[in-house]
Structure formats: structure tokens, C-alpha cells
Image (tube, rainbow, N blue to C red; front, side, top):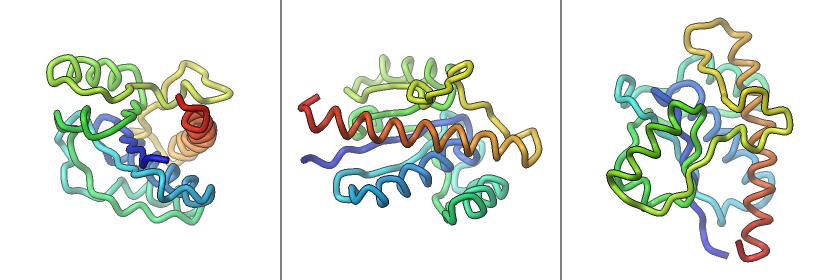
Amino acid sequence: MNTRRILFVCLGNICRSPLAEGVFQHLVAEAGAVDRWEVDSAGTGAWHVGELPDPRSREIARRAAGLSLDSRARQVRPDDFRDFDYVVAMDRRNLTDLQRMQREHGGEARLMLLRDFDPDPGDGQVPDPYYGGPTGFEVVFQMVLRSSERMLAALEEEEAVGG
């Protein structure tokens, strides 16, 4: 099996996408699939480049799952659409921005919304908890966890059947 690369994307790369990166890495490790996946995250904007994830994202990841989020924020690069197999947006605005960027720069990455895999997808978006309180981060964590579990299972199955 080939190593697949997946990039999670939100607006600033300090709340939702690093949380998704950490959760997905954890799920990959639990599944014994570390040799099959490379996981990263990025933002469509450059406001927080070089920063650690928001302390509230780090806290919910630690408290809910014992995860340490220590990646540094970066902005999506044109090469990401060639270097990654999957680019996973947290909301429709991010997806639209990514689609535009991919049209401009090329690349074969498969673009998708994370909540396309959520068994309870609501409006299909992971809301940005940045301007809210800790409760919003808990809600986002649960969405990310549910969606990531299903997404990993679906992508692993797709690979197994030659998708």
C-alpha cells in the first residue's frame, strides 16, 4: 500500500485544522496505519503563520483524548495540491477558496469537506470556534472526532478495494 498524504484546512490553521490533524494522526496510530498516512494542516490565510494552535484547541485535545497539538500554523501552498492526495476543508468557504486555488495552480488532490463523513452532518460545516468560549471547542472536537473516524474507515476501505 502506498503512503497517502492528507491536509486539513481551515482559515487560520490554529483552531479547527490542527485539531483535525491531531485527531486523525491519533486515529491512524490506533489503527496501526502510521506507515500508510502522512498528516498535516494549513490555513487559507496567513494571519497566524508560525504560531502554535489556539490554547483552547490544545486544551480540549489534551483533556478529551490525551493529544498534544504542537504543529505550527502555515498557509496553504500551490504545491499542496500536487503533494497531497486529499485536501480536507472545514467549511464551504475554505472549500471554495481551495477549489479556486487548485484551478489556478493545478494538482490532483481530492478536495472534500470533513463533515461529508459525519453521521450527523448538520449543515455540513465545522464552525469556527475562535470567537466563542470553551463550549464551542468541545462541540468542534466531537464533530472532528466523529467525522475523522468515518473518513479514515472510508478512505482505508477505498484503498483496500483499489479505489
